[in-house]
Image (cartoon, rainbow, N blue to C red; front, side, top):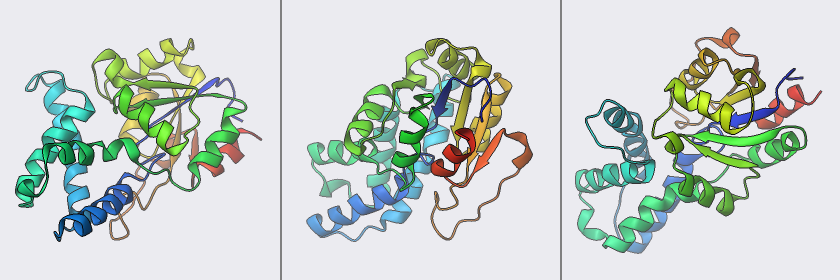
Length: 237
């Protein structure tokens, strides 16, 4: 049992949804439609690779405030040029491609695991994704959130401590009554420093089959689970 915990706050990209495979599948459809031959696994990795650096540019003041949709579009425009396919897409198609992040598919365990945990705990997103993105993704994929919280609400990005503290306040909880659930150790360590409980979800395939996977601090977290169903088994006993 997660003693004293009232709410679970979930990282979304990589933890709850498989962004990489989702982008690759839609990209392959674009290849067929457009008669192009993009390596969409490489494209997806490059797109995700700009996620953290661009958020850091916002938080440092190098860029003005931009939500994740805008940062994704900025990165997309650069990548379309790099992959030499910018002229293959109309503006409307670029907008459609950018919104692939609104249509990400959940890992197979996500909906059953979340549905079980929702019977006991309040379930919230706590993502750097913007509110509209997260709401559209939930609608598209049937993710059973009770509330959608985003770092956008306070114009910051994780792992800024203010994001975790604000989430607890929005949920009407003390930080120790909220457990951050994520597949990323930097997220969990920041949440722990802000007073939250933590659960690490092991997602060895987040970056593909050929990427190394290593947990550096397995004893730092309150729970470590193979997936969300496994976490439900642990905290619902």
